[in-house]
Amino acid sequence: MKSISIIGAGPSGIEAASVLARLGYTVTLFEKSSSPLKNIADKAFLFPNFAAAGDIVELMNKKLLNSNIVQRLDTDIVGLVREGDSGWKLTDAKGASYYSDLVLLATGYTPFDAHRKEELGYGIYEGVVTSLEMEKMIRYDNIVTSLGEKPRRVVFLQCVGSRDEKSGNHYCSKLCCVTAVKQAIELKKQVPDAEAYIFYMDLRMWGQHFEELYRQSQQDYGVRYIRGRISEASGTFDGRVQIKAEDTLMGLPLKMTTDLLVLMVGMEASEGTRCLAKAAGICGDYGFAQSVDPHINDCCTLHDGLFVCGSCKRPMTINDVINDGRAAAVAIASRQ
Image (cartoon, rainbow, N blue to C red):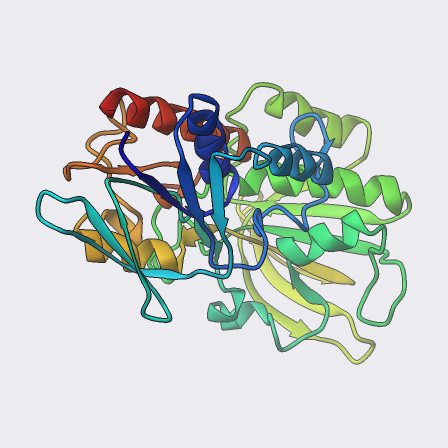
């Protein structure tokens, strides 16, 4: 039976490893962090049913309790090359080498670095936070301003680092619209008196129950939506944030002061994805890994024995990447 290595212990990599292990294959799972599931460990609730992210993490970790899965944590794979007809050579950051007949790349994504949008004041004004930081506030029921007070007003800004020529990312990150709606609802649950505003280009509520969630946010929680982009954020003497924007429906400029400005950061190819996709010769658009095609062979590559799954290919939701991990496992098992 051929040896199988999976690079990345996120939801897609774990799901693929679990399916293959249950089918009787021995799998080596490499993860550069000290624990799996780093990208969802600090999430609060998942749309559209507000399932606790911690429960998903617990269920995914149980999938690793299989003697056919060998975990190699704190192992950062930085090299991936084909060794003739003998399979693939994996090299970690410490120079150690591993050999495998089949390799699945599941290296995931990284959040857009909001420091790159200087005009929005992230890292300059304490009242400007990212959606990841807001998610932690929600998880620990600790939504507070830079002064440690409950906010009276919170503004969410969509498409930070996505659909943005300035940042070089022309694509939609798929998650940001519904995440802002979900976070605004959670804000209103925890701080009922706070005003919640969402600035958007257009709302892409593409999934089942997502449009209903958008309507519920307005009807039941009073979330307000403004079609427009924020051009500038600055600090005020009392620790708040003043924003300049345009209401593109009304065609009017506006100024607003808020206690928190939440930047809904998009998804980019992770450093591991960029590095290994380049090393293996499967670079796609924007640094993501390239599959054969997005329809029939989305988990296969042009190289024999090399497979890809999850958000190392493009932005995906958690249920997307879990399903994609299962698909990759089937593709690998069919290859055996």
